Length: 442
Image (cartoon, rainbow, N blue to C red; front, side, top):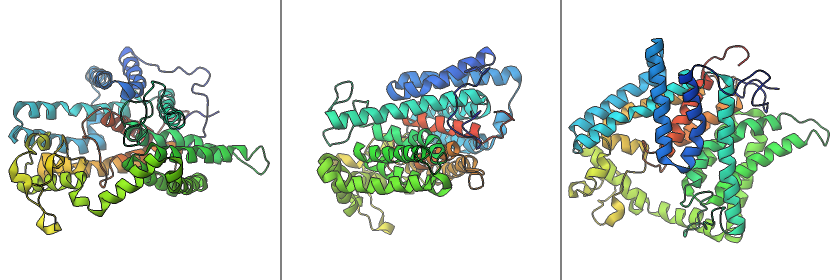
């Protein structure tokens, strides 16, 4: 019945209305659309394939822009905001200790910004393509949920992999990646269906089936994130659900009910999943009791010292990885009362500082941090435009996903690393497309 998941229209609907094509347009557009729809599967299982697909979308988009002389995307807010951050990162990399490898990596990092611009401007301009992208992302989220429950109930996933030694569920993977992937796609996958079901009910028993099913979806999503047993994804799910509950009036009861059930699941973990309790509660409490001496606290201290010693230009692309072991960064942070990291052992260094904002500051100094924070503000402003007045469930889901991915008080992967970076820029580009005014009929 619906013609679009976004723009405030009803859900669910057929993926293609009579006469609709899955994807349509000239060959370059068909190629880019096909690569985009294949990307969720690649992000689940093949970093190399995901990089290739992003490159295909970028190449097709730039060829189209050159052939059509359509460079209006360079004036879009998300492009204008990305340009200062990227150019500053390139300059800092040219001056930093990483040499040519760092500079080249900074230069090619532009591919992710081009990818998001391509989705927002061109690839996802057609409603049927956006609907099919939703189906692919929803299927990916469902696959992670199903395999997480299979592993929890039967001991192994479909591939015979048990849960991690620390108790975390791996879902359909062989490493603890389920939580990090699911938290990025849970909200756009779940909220449109849950909100529609919650708004579809009446007073009869049959009409109550919709709201009950919608509430069950929300509860299932939160319960799964708790049982996966990864601390940061679980906390970020809380943030995303609160955001959704504040914006979506019709789903508010289901969302906050799901949070209560989630709290009950956490309380029950000593009985139903002792490994989850050990990781979510015991280990988290121990880390917070002395955060500066935890692994994440040591990385925070190290990255802050790097920023203080290189306030203007930072250390360039992946400068944290290159310079972390140098003794001059063993100093503490006197103004925070944090002592040095010299006795922190190998945990004081890692491939990256596990926080996007610390990564931006250690790579680009204070100007790099300011440029990155401004870029995030623009992204969220574009994705959130009009949501208070007209809170479309899919757009709320995309906004919530971007918000939790870019939340400053979080442990993260490296910013420009696939798969998580691929999910983030897929969400951003999709959100840009949904936030643009849509023509009548989709």
